[in-house]
Length: 75
Image (cartoon, rainbow, N blue to C red; front, side, top):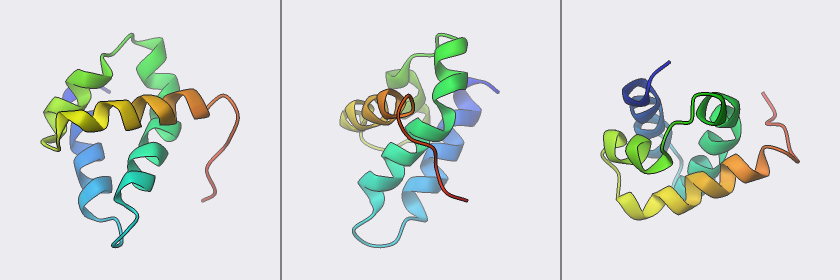
């Protein structure tokens, strides 16, 4: 997994989210991929830039990464 692939996944999660759940899906992305992001020392800002969504959402991805220590996503 690389930054570009993560950006593509983030873009899909953002654009396929139901109305009103886009930011929630950004947090969920951070939770789901926190281990990969942290283990590889990937820049959250770089991932968001590759996704094509607004760079200001990097803060929301970071929140999800931090939340990953406390929660697990439902499947």
